[in-house]
Each structure stands twice: as C-alpha cells, then as structure tokens.
Amino acid sequence: MSKDYEPNIVAFLCNWCSYAGADLAGTSRVQYPPNINIIRVMCTGRVNPLFLVNAFQQGADSVLVSGCHPGDCHYMEGNFYARRRFTLMKELLEFIGVDPRRVNMSWVSASEGGKFKDVVEKLVKDAKDTGPFEQFRRNKINW
Image (cartoon, rainbow, N blue to C red; front, top):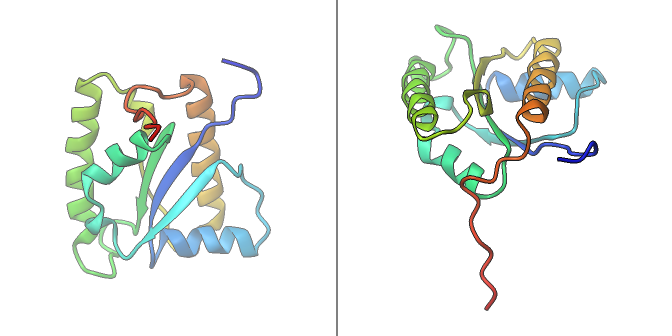
C-alpha cells in the first residue's frame, strides 16, 4: 500500500438527521476529509443490507450507515429496524472475513455537524489502517 492511499467511503445517511448534520458541517465550513461519498436515504430503516455488499463490490473500502438517534426517528421506529439489520449484517460480514472496522453505524442529529466531522475522521483513519478492500470487487468485463 502506498503512502498516498486514500480510502473510498460510502455513507448511507438519513435525510432528516444525518444528512442534515452533514449539510450543517458543510455550511458551517467545518473541515473533514473528502473521502466520503454520501447517499441520502429517507430513513436508515430503508437501507437494505445488500446495499452494503453492493457498495463493497463497487469499490468502497468502508461503509457507514448513519441516522437519527434512537427514539428520534422521523418514521417512529426506522432506526431501530436499521440497528437490528446492521448488527446482523456486521456479524455476517465479520464471519466471512471482513474487518469489522469497515462496517460502521452512527447516530448524528441535524444539529451535530461537529459530530459528523468526528465520525468521518474516525472512518478515514480506520480505513487507512485496514488498507484497500479487494475481497468483493467485481471483475471488469471487457465487451
């Protein structure tokens, strides 16, 4: 691995809290690493566990699912469903050999731009420590 390695992180962010927190960090000019690719979802409860596998297949080195704090979900219980699915998916990925530091979940509210920055910095540090993820990458097809 070269010294210039920069990880690719895919983040599934809840529209009502975590995405708004990321937006607050941006509008407040809080500096955080640019390694994160954000996908806005209406609720983390709608994140299919296969989205994580697909992100790894498409070249992600780490994945984040971030939503409202438990009990503050815009859709009442969506983040509880997400937490349950996420726990099972993380255990399954760890069982097949994926470093658990590559699969992350956080709770960031709309007013926590600084916390979003801290989450991203930790993700980038962990991804750099674990190195590039090659295990699930799809082979390119030349037609």
